[in-house]
Image (cartoon, rainbow, N blue to C red; front, top):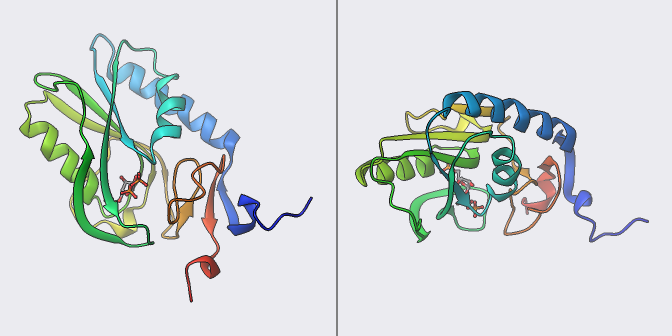
Length: 185
Ligand code: PRP
């Protein structure tokens, strides 16, 4: 039944379906299983957007690994990054001499990933790599590339599967493009 509160009503078009995302998690999980064979990495989810991707991806990794979270925010509820980054909630594990895999939903300007990598390397991590579902290369302002990438993302505002607009739509089960009418006056 039609419902104006329905999450689908703000989606211009689907970009990646649930089935496609599941296949991509399997592919990346297999790459990560190889990359971290014989190691015991700390898998760090970057809250909040990466939660859905992390839980699906982690279950595709046949690797002994620790799990942790960090909340680093760069957006202030709108569609553009402010460039200002703050640690809202820190990790609980000590990364010294550990291999760390950051899991992100999206890399946009790259500022958030660069900030986290610098922070964890400064704390003595042996290696810091990143697995990301969506790589929005067109928006990059710093020289950084995630090592494990699900999809290259078009330069549009995407929501769903963890990604929000003004705090909403994270629980859409697929990735879609937000209707411009939702953020244009
Ligand atoms: C989003 C996303 C990345 C970051 C990418 O997080 O999860 O962490 O922005 O942008 P950047 O490459 O331009 O730095 P956000 O700060 O919106 O927090 P959230 O995960 O809680 O939505």
